[in-house]
Structures are given as C-alpha cells and as structure tokens.
Image (cartoon, rainbow, N blue to C red; front, side, top):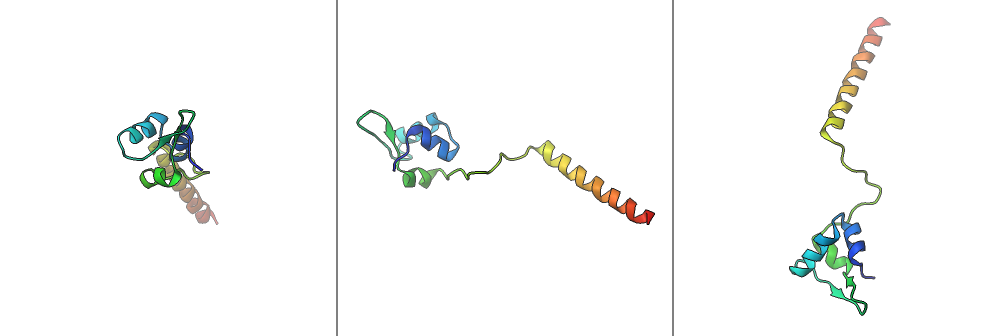
Length: 86
C-alpha cells in the first residue's frame, strides 16, 4: 500500500515539502494517482529516509541531561551520608 505525501512525511519525521522535493529531484520515486495525489511506495521512501520508531519520545535537551546527572550525584551523596550515620 502506497503512502500519500502526508503519510510519507509522518512515517519519516520529515515535512511534506521535504518529501515532495525529494521526489522532484529524483532522490526518491513517486507517482501521481488518478486524483492527482502523490503515491510513494514505503520501500522506496525508507530506502532514503529511515522510518520513525513509534513510541519514541523526543531526545532530551542538554539541560535535562545535565539536571539528571546532578540528581544522580545528589542521590549518591545522600546515600553515602546516610551510610556514615549508621
């Protein structure tokens, strides 16, 4: 089953203009159906653009990563202090 332009964009995490540009420049192949809508075969699309994995959350920012490390260090410090009390 072929993707529409929107489905192809959603499946790859790209925009519709990016997918259309790839078709127009020959990077991927696609054809228009009888209603004038683009059809892109999934195997052709994913030959160039990897599929987006479902359920994957966006990558954390540097600040979030830095905060996570700080929290881990504070927890380790707290645990070490608790052990010294005993």
